[in-house]
Image 1: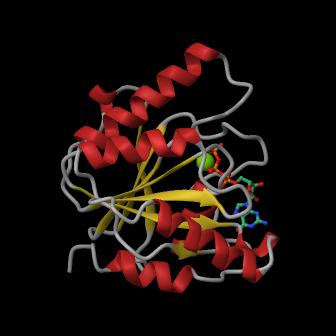
Image 2 (image 1 turned 30 degrees about the horizontal axis):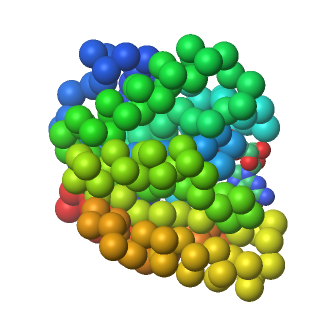
Image 3 (image 1 turned 60 degrees about the vertical axis):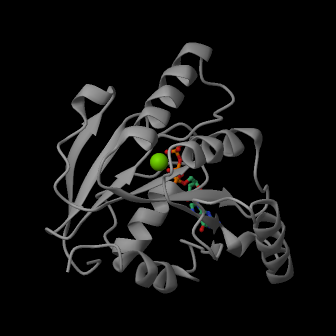
Length: 197
Ligand code: GTP
Ligand code: MG
């Protein structure tokens, strides 16, 4: 699936403008700046379609992309962005929650966690929501290039332990660096299995 051309398909600020579902869908969620947009670029090897930024809070709409007629990839706006206005923050969060808990055709949410910082309360809130709505999700540790390998392994173990009795969690925790490409092929293989044949 990831060999197909990546095309921007739709952007939504409200749930009424979510496009119709006709492909299996994989969404990328996580705190602002965790590397969601960068991971989409690395997975598809198509830079420039999904925009990334040094400024947290860059992605402010839910952005839908198509990989040929195989897979829909969704870049979610980040949460926990410290200097966003309170009401803006709530609106994004509500939108993400609504998307995650109601979207038919959503096969998997990749919840990205910064390896250096680990899980925060907002991540747990989203996890609780996905558990309640029985949305399958997996944890992807990002930016593994900025910490020592031993700390990456420790972080993965810590998260696996914390979440070990969660029902909708798909194991194992995966580890990637969009910068160096580490772990990207492995994640691509896992996600390809969810795409249309
Ligand atoms: P929002 O759209 O604000 O929610 O952020 P995002 O999660 O889409 O993050 P984005 O991909 O825009 O990346 C944020 C910053 O982290 C950028 O400066 C990236 O260059 C950097 N970054 C992303 N992935 C990696 C990585 O694997 N390693 C390192 N060192 N930096 C990364
Ligand atoms: Mg982004």
